[in-house]
Length: 525
Image (cartoon, rainbow, N blue to C red; front, top):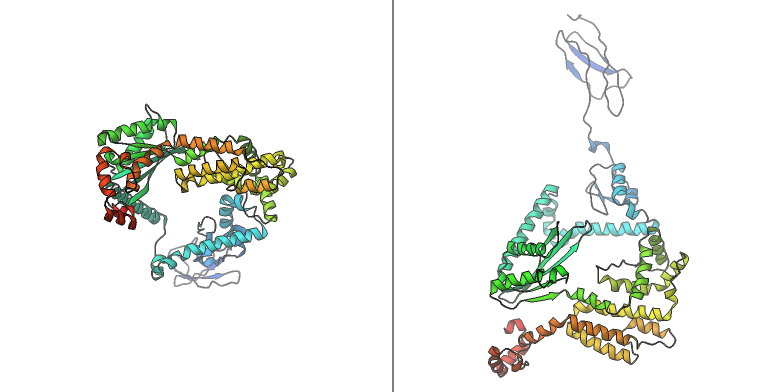
C-alpha cells in the first residue's frame, strides 16, 4: 500500500524540438500528480493524471504530433532566381514543369531543380537568367488566367475543380472516349474517304505507325482527323502494317467500299507490287466495291526531298552539316557560339539537320548562310578553318541551295502545276543570267566579280524533269477532275462517253452558267 504522504520522483522525457525536460511528480494523498519542470520553466498547460490506489507510475510520454503548418515556413524570393520556383496559393510551384512541392523546404525545392532542370538552366546567369525567369512567370500567369479570360463568370467554378491525379486521369479518359465516339459517328457518315499512313521510329527504337483519315459527307463537308498511333513492337513487315491499318479502320467502323485512295511514305514495304501494303489495301477495297477505281499516292513532302537530291549539291551540304555538328554536338562549343551571337545582338542560333526531317534542310541552310561571318570567325578561333567560306564559287552554290530549298519547302502551299511553271520560268531567267527570284544568290553575285549563274540552268532543268516523273499521277487526276472543277470550259471529247452529252447540255444552259459564276462549287453541286 502507498504511504499517506510520500514523494515519488521519476523522469519524463519529452521530445519537443529536441529538448528534454526532467519532471517531478508530486504524489498527494488524494491520488493526483502535478508536473513541474525542474529547470525552472513551467509547462504552459499543467497535466493532471488520476492515479488510483495501489498504482505506481513508472514512465509517461508527452509526445505531440508534428504539424508542418505551424512551423512558419516562408517562401523566399531568392528561390525564384536560384531554383526557378514561385509560390501559388501557398504552394511552391516549379516554373519549368509546373510541378508542386508538397513541403515548403529549400532542400525539397533545390532537389527537384537540380535533378530535373539543373543541367539545362545552370548555364544561364545574370541578366539572361532573369529574363528567362520573367518569361516563365508571365507564361504561368497566362495559364492561370485562361479561365478568367474565356469565361470570367465561372472563375469560382474553375477554382473548385479538383486537380488530383486520379481525377485528372479520369477526365482525360472520359474526353478520349467522347472524341472517339464522335469520330466513329463522323466516319460512318463518309460517302468517300482516303487514308494516309506513315511509319517511323521514336527515340526508344519502337516503330510507330501513324494513321490519318480524310473523308467527305453528303453535305460536301471535308473532315480530316488523326485516327491512331499504333506501336509496332515486333516486326514492321507489309503484313504487320496492313493488319494494323485494317484493325484501326474496323474499330472506327469505316466502310471499305467507300475508300478511294491511300497515301504512304514510299518505303519498299509500303509500295511493293506483289505484297506491299498498297497492293493489299487495294485488293481489299476493290473486293468491297466491286473493282472500282482506287488511287495511291506517295507523300508529296517526301518526294519533294527526293527531288531536291537530284540537284547533286552534296559538296555544299557536307560542309554545312559538318560545321553545324561541330558547333551543336559539343556542349562547350554550343554555349560559346551562343555567347558570340548574343554579343552580336543575334537571338537565333543554328538548328540541327537530319535526313529524316526533310524540311529542316532549308532552315539549316538559311541560318548557316545568314551567320556565315560569325561561323567563320568562331571556327577560326577553334582552329577549324572552313576554307569554303572564302571561296566565291562555293558561296554561290550555297546561296543557290538556300533559295531553291526555300522554294521547295513552300511546295505544300501551292499547286504542283504552278510549281512546274515556276521552274520553267526560273530556268529561262537563269539562262539569261538573271537570278531575280533567288535573293541570296543575287546578293552574293552583287559582291562577286564576274559571277556566272547560267550554270544553275541545268540544275533547274534536272529538277523539272524529276518533278514531271514523280508527280505524274497528279497530271492524270487533273484531267479527270477538270470536268467537276470547271464543267463549262471542259471539252466534251475529254470526258467519258457516258457524260459527253450531259456536258454539252450543261455548257449551253445560261442560267446554270450564271449560277456557277456566282456561288461556290459545293453550293452549285
